[in-house]
Length: 279
Ligand SMILES: NC(=O)c1ccc[n+]([C@@H]2O[C@H](COP(=O)([O-])OP(=O)(O)OC[C@H]3O[C@@H](n4cnc5c(N)ncnc54)[C@H](O)[C@@H]3O)[C@@H](O)[C@H]2O)c1
Image (tube, rainbow, N blue to C red):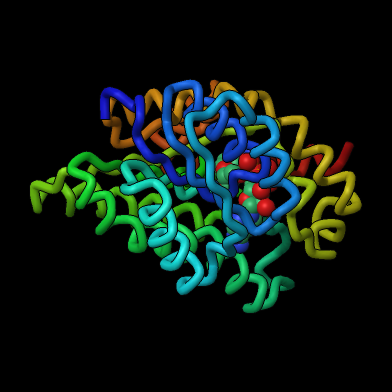
């Protein structure tokens, strides 16, 4: 999709961070916006920031883990805007803890938002994107969809799943000569609310010697890229029809690391996490 002007773009998780920055950037590109989030107050703030900047904006409180709600939202977007050209499945949450300590409910929760949310958004919008004649699906994975790290098994599983799903989706679309394409995005550390909003299990303190708050603050120090820059890279990837886009210099380091040492990188990362805890 080389020209985004007058296209209808739907973004999940638009009440904060990358989703909000994307809404602002897509507005500057001339898009009509359909925004959703589970956090109605955050979404209202995004809408306020867009005042006078976007052609048209609709908002909806939608939990991406709820398939029926996402389906109803996709239908509402087309009813309100006449079509849908782009969906960015961005809503996401983080979870930290050892596998021994996290519950299966914790895993269901993070997979429900990060993986099933992406599946729901893709499936709900795909028929509408096809009907528009020119469509694109963007799914947000992470550098942790390329490399794993300790205490992040749920997040890693969800983001590897998003990558596998999206890379296969792209090939399905090519095989069937669809007018829709797909891109998988792998952000490095982006300065957003994700660490503060994370579920952090008590086992993190046991494993690192740091409280949940201290661990989140430590983790946030590795957030080096602005959400605005992330939005630019995501939109650029749509315009260039890229299969994969990495965001930030740290993402390029993770990508290189796993190519150079496909399993050896794990020892390195565990060492870094251990040394952070010791400080
Ligand atoms: N910030 C980073 O360093 C980073 C790195 C890699 C990937 N990501 C991914 O980027 C995406 C955006 O995250 P962010 O960093 O902007 O975080 P954020 O916490 O600032 O924003 C996430 C948004 O998703 C919303 N959300 C959470 N659960 C939801 C649900 N069930 N239904 C609908 N909305 C829901 C939140 O209310 C919030 O507005 C996520 O998928 C995240 O995993 C972020």
